[in-house]
Length: 168
Image (cartoon, rainbow, N blue to C red; front, side, top):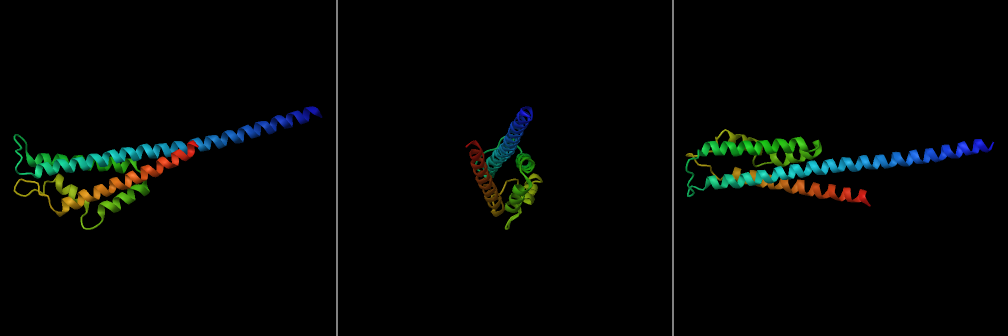
């Protein structure tokens, strides 16, 4: 009879330890998921910064007073467009679907469809007399990428707060 009580007690202790371990494993899994999202969001934020820096380089190409010796303006413009497209694809790959849907909404909102504008940069159809024009489409695209960056920063701050809650 005492042996029965001992085995029942041992079984209860094992059950308690097992439940506690499963609970901790579930918390670790959630924290790990949030860390992955946070890391991927930071990569996307970094790529958005590269895009904004590329727009700065395009601004330099638009300055007709700066001499561009030994460089082909159409080739440089196309390369910058490809860099933007590549960074945008990395953002697309790193973010969960709901976040990327929000970014798509920001990029396709009127008055300028940014993806079409980037494609026109790559194809050099935006060039006028072998110079890169700074027009309303350029400004709208640049503004859209600033909005994307703001969204990514806000998302990153929310994820960081969620991760801190798991530490406490």
